Length: 273
Ligand SMILES: C[S@@+](CC[C@H](N)C(=O)[O-])C[C@H]1O[C@@H](n2cnc3c(N)ncnc32)[C@H](O)[C@@H]1O
Image (cartoon, rainbow, N blue to C red):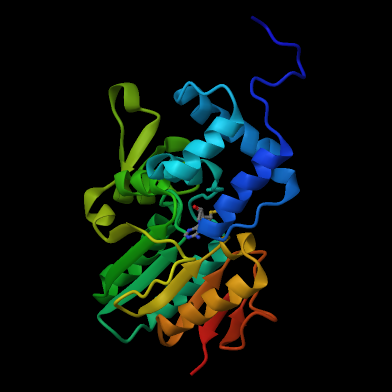
């Protein structure tokens, strides 16, 4: 039966929204503004259909009781926008650092890596220098959302998403799909192996058992309030080697958030001793 244009398939009230955004905030730290009401509705309706639920009240109850559905709920509401070579100037800065890098390996953490374009961009931009200078690249890539982590580990992307790269780079790093996969390409295995994808909730009390030379945490802080940003900046400070570098997203800053870092470029910070 066709519904009138404005009539929704499911009744979604302000109370449902408030309850769901509270659950999301408690777990992920993501601040969900009122404008996200429609986004929540449109992203979550497929979960109601999947469980043959007829109303959002039943969905809220399910999310509260069922750990698997809670994970699906979180995967639905995260914003995973990303792309290859996003904020190119960070990769150029990293290339300059690598040209004089004194050690035989470099450990990099991509925190909030989404579907992998960020850590693969790090490799694509760094490998030629590291290969020439005999530096091993190790990348840890973490996110809250298990769906995007799975995509990252597979390393399969639409061909159009790597059009920014010239043919030489595409040949070196990607394998083109065949048959029904001609619109797809896959990061070649030796490069996939350089990245360890892991789930990590930045809001939890994590402690990683290593320190990093470089941390990328780009376009993630924007979702958190200031106390959470301050706490996270402190955690990054603790997980960086002396003089380690922290890259933030284009609209993010440590101004009034942390005094533990020196600004060394546009959204680029260096750990203060
Ligand atoms: C907009 S994407 C940024 C992706 C990439 N860093 C970039 O700049 O292109 C933000 C990512 O942060 C992740 N995220 C949000 N809250 C998180 C949390 N509490 N712990 C870990 N990751 C989180 C989301 O799942 C999402 O993939």
